[in-house]
Amino acid sequence: MKILVHVCCAPDLIATYHHLKDLDLTLFFFNPNIHPPKEYEKRLENVEFLARKWKLPLIKGDYNVKKWYEVVKEYRELGEGSRRCYECIKYRLEETAKLGMKGFDAFTTTLAASPMKNLSWIEEIGKALERKYGIKFYFADFKKKGGQEFSIKVSRELGIYRQDYCGCIFSKRETEEKRKISRMRREEKLKRILNLYGVQREFELDPETLEIDEELLKMGKEFLRELILVLRPRRVLLPGNLWVGKRNLKIGRYKVRIVRRSKDDRF
Image: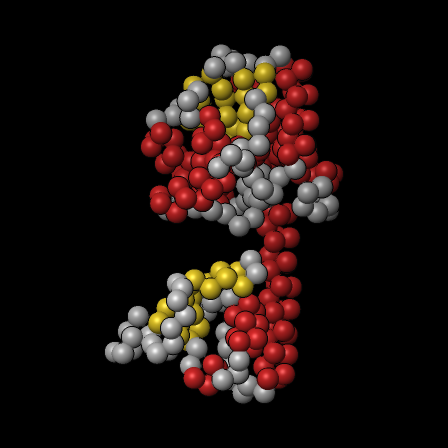
């Protein structure tokens, strides 16, 4: 079966490839929604890398942002996951279906691998396009059966860029606003924690390393737990004489690496 695969990004392509690697695949990178152009180029470069690695043909669609904007402008004030997103998905899949009519047995999309996308929308749109253009829509939840785990593993091994917003200018603005609000709340929570425990020290959010010295240890486990959760360090540095028996500390859904300070103060 020859399948035309609409590709939204490299991480979702990896999950999709996990399911479809035994089929005859051609990739179609069509994402005029991505903003800014540098972000578009970055995502395209990562997809090109995977296409070369897996020896898959890659077709690059037009990057016509103005045409895409005409499709979604009526819904531009709506938030992520709204009709705006529905029309954006429909637009990209319809172009894929049209291209798929030229020598392909079916078409599909890596959007079905994204944990942030409405899977029922994708199936609904794909099946409607199947009826309209007479080309089969291959539908599956590519996150399942090891797809998402495979994507994370391969992305880490190959150094694949994993974006932190959907792609369009609206989602970028919304994501940045959410981050700003989240950071303000974390700063307020940090002040409350330090005041509650009477700690007269300054801390930065999202540090590379949080060093736990004897003074902080005396504050107790509950304080350290709350401090780590609000700061979100990449790793926690413990005194060399403190044995915890593990390399990672998990607090709820947050996991941080534990490092022990050696006698010569190097780690």
